Image (cartoon, rainbow, N blue to C red; front, side, top):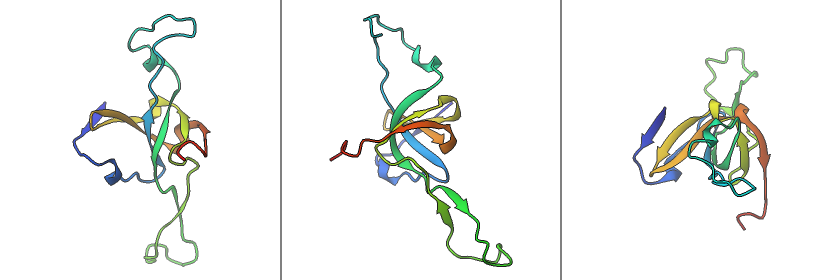
Length: 125
């Protein structure tokens, strides 16, 4: 199931909780030996890769300083997530949700679906 969002500005999207917005990396169309792969063969792979575009605030931390947490209206604190914008993420696609935004495919995955991050600090300099 996919969701088609008709909007123009990706910066207006806000990722919530422990979710991560990923732009899937375009898969190779050929094998290393030069054979062309048929369309749809990459969807069957158990893991996919893509670039992290947006990261949610993280896991909410309860405020234990007050006796009644429901009466406390202080600002919520979060335990931040590991991914940063620009990281290459290896993730489980079955845990994600696909959206179409400006005719491009994006995946929203929970933090727990990310298996590995590849961070290149000088990538966007």
